[in-house]
Length: 557
Image (cartoon, rainbow, N blue to C red; front, top):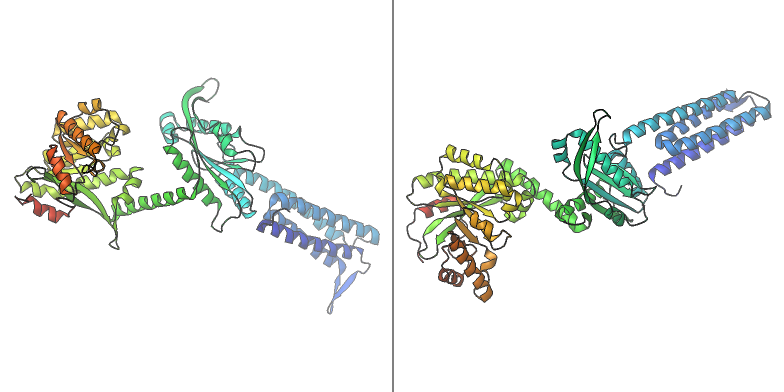
């Protein structure tokens, strides 16, 4: 045995016990005495032979239970040696005293073979994926656990068929299963004899590469996007469908010495973390795992959990940053900002949970919370005020691209009786990358309802000027990164001046965010920026302070 795993140690101990039993049986079979004495008891020699044979049979059966492949071989060898010794002993002693032990060994031999075939069928059923014919997750855990325990080097690749849910929804489960088979067949072409493949979940497969030719190089030949034809049904009712087979792979190189926390599940999780990173790659969709990814993934999962808990237990609350006219310092309105307060009163920055929420549909739930809360809080304030205050709310690209977004906002406006002309949604240029047609349709419908639309972070995105000119936007918002250096950098000052000029050509008003110094304010005023927001005139405040500010008439320059 080349590797002393716990299983192999158990096999070794049972084998030694079996050999000990054989030695005792040989001695018994060659004895001329019909009896032996145990204290005051006189016991027939045949009884001792039967007891030892029974014990040997039990040991052989235990060997099969420990490892049915290796155990059955050892068990059969021990039984044959035992039967041969007993038979030889009967011939030499010209006595059939060992016949019961011989029969016990033969019965044990048949039992071992029966158990072996039962375990073989059961193992194939329990360890095989019924769609691909490859190993399933149980087989994966068994194989990788044995590699880790034996301190073997190996490489694990987690390969995913992208858009699998969409394929199942559009084309049907049978087509999805056929495409999984195609994927498994394609992956099988790069495997060596010792490599093994497993189906982990619906669209994920794992490949266990033994040391050899670079797995990464082999994967590069097949991790591509291509259109394949999938066929299901009989010759008479054959259905052929063309689908895009697009694959990504996360790879983990695993070498001893292993730390005590390394398990089959943790290795797979590392590979899945690397696989998730491939979604940000445009070319070769293969990513090698490193520990930095793991830390990032852990933080991402923690952030997702925090968002779910916050939505469920009301950890979220809103603060409002005032916006003022640049020349007269009159209150234009407030930008709504979300904050999170945990039960221990710790304040969590939006930068710690918004990026994670944006990678899932959780961001849409956050948007719903902010919209509904801001509208309900400011509805009575607007009723008691003659001013045309604007409540500005940041909307994610996913939410703005939702087909039901306009109808949802219309229902809220009607239910809360919130004046649409006092409502503004801030979107970024990246909103147009999510679903262009739906986003533009939602913007136009909202504008027709009276809702204002502001384009946030202007100057940092990639939307064409021609496209912007066609959109019914009310307000351009200059990103803080463009404001920071306008005191000292003439090029940046010219850039800000161009953005303001462009906004006015588009019949939009312009607001600059992140204004922190009087010198910046003077430059923006000089370049005819309409509004500003920033610490120079107002930090984010709670709702009660914002409500009190609404009743002020003068703020003083």
